[in-house]
Image 1 (cartoon, rainbow, N blue to C red):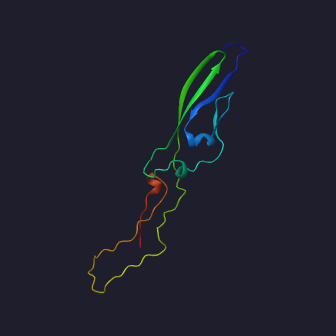
Image 2 (cartoon, one colour):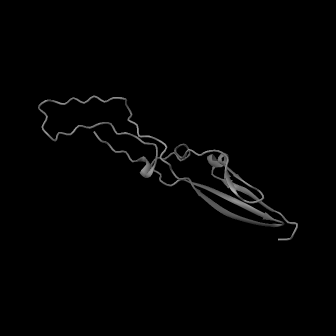
Image 3 (cartoon, one colour):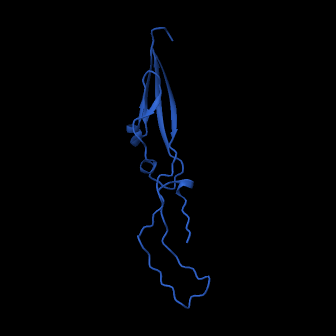
Amino acid sequence: MAPNETLAFTFLSISGQFRKYFHINEGTGIISLTSSIDREKVCTSAETLDCFVKTSVALRSGISLQIFKVLQHITDINDHSPAFPVQSHHIEISESADPGTSFTIPDAVDKDSGNNGLVGYKL
């Protein structure tokens, strides 16, 4: 690089809905967040454990151009509590029910993924 040449970093492409969350410093190439990311809103499939933002970054120096790919992994935090779909559930138990008789309750749902989305029950 010649002494008076400057480096210029720019995003060539970034996954659609993520564009508003990231900024690249044109002089240093440092990628930073412009706002908080709610993983459950931008990675809509609850079954998907991996959520990635794919970007292509261009580095210009004088007349040369280098393009490289950057993959940002958006990890989940345990920011949602499990919730039942209804406030109450009525179960009728006959006095003639045998010991060990099972009764079902609605499944609770947790918007978090992976281990953060596991739901357990205790009485």
